[in-house]
Image (tube, rainbow, N blue to C red; front, top):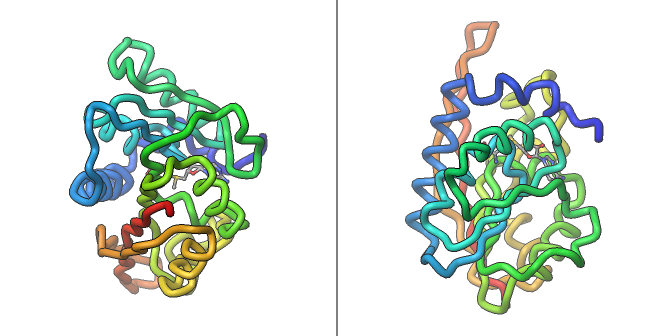
Length: 207
Ligand SMILES: C[S@@+](CC[C@H](N)C(=O)[O-])C[C@H]1O[C@@H](n2cnc3c(N)ncnc32)[C@H](O)[C@@H]1O
């Protein structure tokens, strides 16, 4: 399908800032989640697998899903050596039929939610894919004026108001919705200005 991520997939991992953001988010997720060799994990919007492949050694099985085939091709190439035998890759987005997917203990997503148009619908789909007591962990931007992405990349949301996102997940049937700061990204702009953008980690438990 047409997504701007196909065009940037080949060079995605060459940006050290993206790699650093993913590493910081992984560290927060590992601190927040109780992952075991029995855990089944769905990494939503997995992209080239910067987060998926760092989480994979801590779980039993990991399914990496994304709507951009270009990003998934990079991830598949990383898996071709046979390392990470517990990782599967699938083209899927929350707007598609989920009946072929198994139930998961954990669903993660790093910097994907701001690209998802209908967050309440997606939260309901995640609820349906988790076993009771299962956990979501989504890292994303706090609400800003859209300057993080600028005009180069379309997003549906310029970050999130935490109270709004908490209410959305509670409405979808999650409880214990918790936010913590995962990372801060400082960007310099052509006009000489500089801004720091906080990234949160939301965790919530499926009731
Ligand atoms: C900013 S990248 C983050 C990739 C990876 N999670 C990371 O942290 O390195 C966002 C990813 O989400 C994917 N994406 C965007 N909208 C999506 C949707 N509705 N369903 C599934 N994946 C989506 C994009 O194709 C892209 O690979």
